[in-house]
Image (cartoon, rainbow, N blue to C red; front, side, top):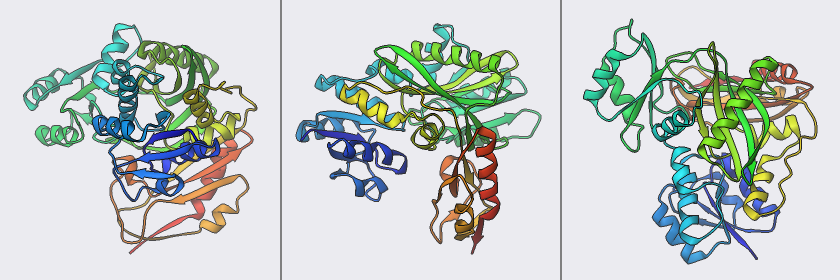
Length: 396
């Protein structure tokens, strides 16, 4: 029996784990968290951090998997590429290029060199550089760690307001693994993500997803709807910029998830990832709206099989994340009523009784989600709203 290493075993990797099992593979999951939900669906669990490439390589030499992959997390993409190169395995992106897909500093520089539209930015190495750079920035700008995800450490700043700049720096810096942060232009306009797939260097856009983001100062995603409802002219601009970014990062095989702001000057890259989109976009929304199962496509690519990326239909799909006031979570009411609404596909609550609910500053602060299928994007979004209206989060 052929075997596979899947780096990551959280709920967002479940689809990949199940897909590998469906194809008859012996599945090893690697994760630092022994409580990760995906462990129960795998054949064997290895308590190895997905970002510790040396330990993953050691485990690969010991267990000799036929394939190595990851699903929806940024940093494990580096690990997969590095280990595959060390072992002579096929990988959809080189280790050098994987750095450009996971480190925002390298990414910005690569995209700029290739002429891909991006916001103006500065790389900050320490507090002294930060204090100098703040003076050169416009009134409004964004601070973010160079090498993290899920909106961790990302914050909007307005110089007309009073700030403790050292405190602001430390907040973002604490989420930076390598120590660098970026300060960059605050881009206005709607935000989307582009779900695409690449086979032997040829890329195809599967769909464009409209994003809902929290109000400033944080940038947490609270909903996604597809297909996009922007104008065709705007969508064509988005497609062109996304394809240019994929080419610049040099993805050869596999999925990509490109986040774009449609500014008054045109589409500009927020960031690009050489992986499936998280937040249940590619695992749930894309199959519901297009009939393209990107998890299957990814597994086919890893296994060297033909990739079925043909769009089967055009429906609407949406996800909305459940929010709550701050406090201590007790339980959620109205789930059964919400599930009874036509088109509701799934409702999940992430929090357990006694968990603290904090200010919505990163994706991990969300309470749960609702997923809906509709005749079109508006219909799917409406059904999510109906479901959210039935759900009440009860605090202790």
